[in-house]
Length: 88
Image (cartoon, rainbow, N blue to C red; front, side, top):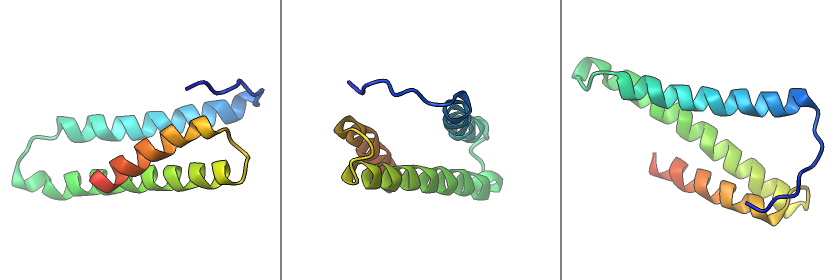
């Protein structure tokens, strides 16, 4: 991405990693569900929650870039998450 490294407390970096892991696990959970009518509500819930997470991340990153708190390179993440949230 070309972002400069900024020293962060280990807890903050770990928190972000755990958040990303939790969204990834939700996708794995959904992918392992058999595609039967009984699981339709579970599929919808997983897709809705991950779309919400992506939309919030996208909005947060746009807000931080516009406020000059993050580098412009973060727009690539904001745009990607925004597009995937809309798709979902």
